[in-house]
Amino acid sequence: MIVLAVPKGRILDELRPLLRAVGIEPEAAFDDDESRQLRFKTNLPSLEIIRVRSFDVATFVAFGAAQLGVAGNDVLMEFDYGDLYAPLDLGIGACRLSVAEPSDLSQSDDPSRWSHVRVATKYPNITRKHFAARGVTAECVKLNGAIELAPSLGLCQRIVDLVSSGRTLKDNNMVEVERIADVTSRLIVNRTALKTRPEEIGGWVERFREATARNA
Ligand SMILES: Nc1ncnc2c1ncn2[C@@H]1O[C@H](COP(=O)(O)OP(=O)(O)OP(=O)(O)O)[C@@H](O)[C@H]1O
Ligand SMILES: O=P(O)(O)OC[C@H]1O[C@H](OP(=O)(O)OP(=O)(O)O)[C@H](O)[C@@H]1O
Image (cartoon, rainbow, N blue to C red; front, side):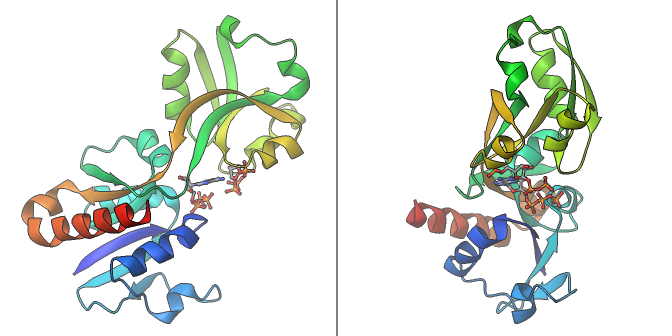
């Protein structure tokens, strides 16, 4: 059996056509929002799909519980798991990881003068590394969502979060002040599985590569 781990949130809409293009048709419950099922059969007897939180996709694949997965490079950068290989950019889930602060603060602020910042984020490792590279100490407050609330309630002045349309920042009176990384979703593979089952796992990487190239 090959297990493919996919994130349950927003990437799914863009992922469905790609699954179809590589010949994977999940059972009906996969598309039923009311279903509490977490593990899904497909039209292929040797392949199942699990639907988990985006950060957990990397964990399932890194530990070999799933052989294949789909995860944003935001997730991969945050955890830096050794046993993961990310051979293919699927070109979906595009957004960016940025530093933001309240619009009124940004008018007088100069990020090049920061020496210590307090930052609310879901990405403390990336944030610390980003600031440390230019000698700034980042004190991170870990949140799991609604990060843009933090400045208005005095938790901290800066945040590091994903931005795509920019609407969430705008509606919360914040602006982007630095871009840390561009983000897209990657096909990820457990290294040991690729070594021990090169034809099966490598075959899937090639099928996804061809479908992604056709899509581009
Ligand atoms: N605007 C966006 N906001 C958040 N994530 C985005 C956006 N655009 C693309 N992504 C990608 O989608 C992933 C988030 O997936 P998903 O929607 O499953 O997670 P979530 O519901 O935000 O968080 P969690 O998995 O912690 O519940 C990110 O890791 C990123 O790679
Ligand atoms: O630039 P935008 O198009 O507005 O998208 C960015 C927002 O989307 C994500 O949040 P999500 O909707 O996943 O909710 P969350 O805050 O609970 O993570 C992200 O954390 C930003 O808040």
